[in-house]
Image (cartoon, rainbow, N blue to C red):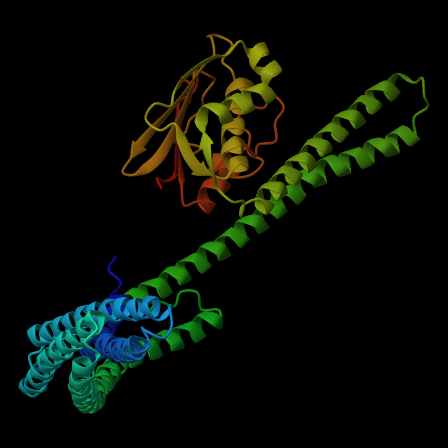
Length: 507
């Protein structure tokens, strides 16, 4: 049955969740966009600052080695180690110059990559200015590098005077180059600041939209919850009143609502609960009847035993009637013991009604039952025919399935027809999704139409020539009632019996 309250709640919950998802998606997209903008700034700013810092460092080292080369060149004629130091300074200068060239190319590549990725016109303008500044920086360094190398070559040739004159221009170009680096760093800082400012503006706008959407969606959610609550309030009030009547003992209480009510499933559950309460009440009444029947069956042998014991007290041992009275006492004691044991079996069954189900094999359970009845089966010379191919297993409490099979087999063996061989057939079938066990025998049988209701009562025995408690079918019916199963009996005198046991639905 369709759960309308659940479906209604799911629809409204889905609506609210959808609105929250839209709001969350919007917030997430804005966060991703902001995060992307910050990544863009970091992707441009951090590597470029690192490269420019490296250029500054290498440029400083270049200047130091250039100055060392000049100083050692002035002392070439004075100290023997001056030439070696000059060559070392010259080599280091050229190595650092090459590194600065590589760093300048990398810086230009970073700016070009940023230009290709940027869509904002204002950012594009700033990046173009930055690109021009980097290219100018490359040009300045090329001039500085070429002139510095020219001076170093003059020093190597021994033309110290000309080299010193040209070194002044190199120093001027060095200062200009350093100023250019500072200018590039300043432009980069301006670009970064503008990017951060843009991100902050977008974040502020996003928060405004999120607040507006939150208010809007919250209002819609409140309206949806209010309308839903109003629709279910009246039916729930009827359910509450019905529960009060039910609690007061009126087990016939049922609730009727208009068709298509969203609480129809709750009302059905309430009515189903009322049905179960009535079933429980009927079970209590059955148990009360069983108690009365038990008391009646106990009363006769107890009174009989009491009378016989009084007779024994008045009879001397050795008298002809003494052995007869004693024999009757023993028979009454056996009858009393059988009734008490039967009562104990029923009580044990009732205590086990809540036993957890397990996956059971019909073959294995039948083998366990047959092993426990080995002597009775052997004495009756019974032949078994089984076919569990349609359903080999079932989820059922072990004690319950075992009790059903044991009582059926016990009856089949006990009420064997002496005029024909005893054949017991067991078969499983699936009937409308329900596991059904069919047990047939070729025993004495009985008039199932005449005794249809009698055979389900406790302590009812249709054949008195063998001992028995008369509880077999009562126990089976009790188990099946608890599991919402059903027992059908088809039998005729001297034509055997067929028991159809609808156990439960398949899992």
